[in-house]
Length: 316
Length: 280
Image (cartoon, rainbow over all chains, first blue to last red):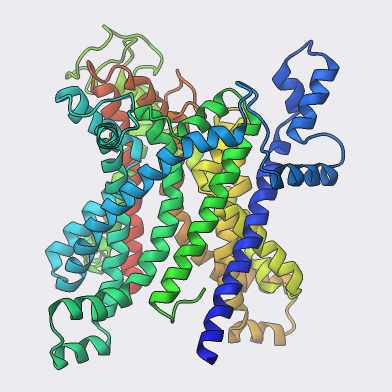
């Protein structure tokens, strides 16, 4: 009874913190437009714009006047699910995001899945065996991949698979299931390479730490066999830091996909964002930023939660 | 004799954990910096048309010529100053701001103030660096100056977080207590005792942050949001060469390799220092 209470209290506390952070994320995406030098509305409409039009745009962008009342009007709009409309096309920001976000999430989930499938065996094997040359090679290779920007890996991939062999298309997309993989596999590979290097490194170091603990020795002495030993004695105690990192990495991947979607011309939210930045589509940028912030807050909450459930020693 | 002796002590230094990583990282970085100084002084101008467009890499032009007949070799090394310089500013300014704020937060006592500032810091850190940089550029306008402003405005939060955690620990140490008992003024304690100990931690983060910031600067330029063509900058050179990748791979590969070279050398140094610190 008492144990369950403590568990739910901890999780609730972490949830409250996520809500507070989400609030600041919202404030930041509201306030960001205020760092613009001058008046964004008149800059956007150009010289010679009518005063009414400028005032209307200022109202849409929630700038000018008292910042606090502006914030509440922004908040009111937000509660009604209204993020404004794109200045370029007039389409509602929410609709644009709903149209483009699924592809990005699909891409990230697919890469995460591949990265997990690769890095769990790699990380545990190298951490468990701990042989010098193997570890050196592993650390060296992952260090190089970690330091390489994803767009360069993507360009090398394009050079090999698109230019030399014509295996991967450089632009175009098909939403139907098996066909879309034809367009997605190279971006997924690029993401997977980077994520695998990060995750397997962390897993490797926590497995080496777990390996030296006493309960592992106990497990060996007791003769716990194969799969059971691997899961309960090695992987489960080592997985918590990896899960936290994974949730962080998935957030970072949002940034990485912005670049990848631009390179491969995939109609995801990242490419939409770059287009919005280049055309100074303020409401669209603010809306996408808000979504990205909310997603990262959610991911880090989930990461901490799962890590805590796997290993109660984790602080959340 | 003296040289022999210093060489021996150097060898002993390398033999300690992480020595290979640190020394090879420093050597790689030094090579890049030296070329980055020498090539702009003695080489071709980065915007001069020296030969046929798309000339292959040759002895005269080791990295080939680009679509306008500019020497890629000198362009790649002209960019060293731009890329590393912007990244350097983008790391040091947040490092200084964040460390100071973190130390002050570590000493603050008011709970409400602490939790408010703490959650603002969490809010800023919630955004991936690249995302918030891209969004801020919408409002500041593209350019390298905007990149530095944005990094200073946002990246300090990560340093503040680390510095605060460390400052809380350091503030409880005996030597701080001793300095307080001796009646030293608060400012002197912060400057002489807290700051050096806390910044050891944030410098360690700054080194690995340098790698991240280099890729963010190049990534923003690649998207056309930081350095714009015809500027010699690795990210924008890769973006420039992208259209011609079918006919001239060297337009993309050499700037990319330079970028990797810089980042990998730093990551070797970080890795080496980490191993030396842990003694394995």
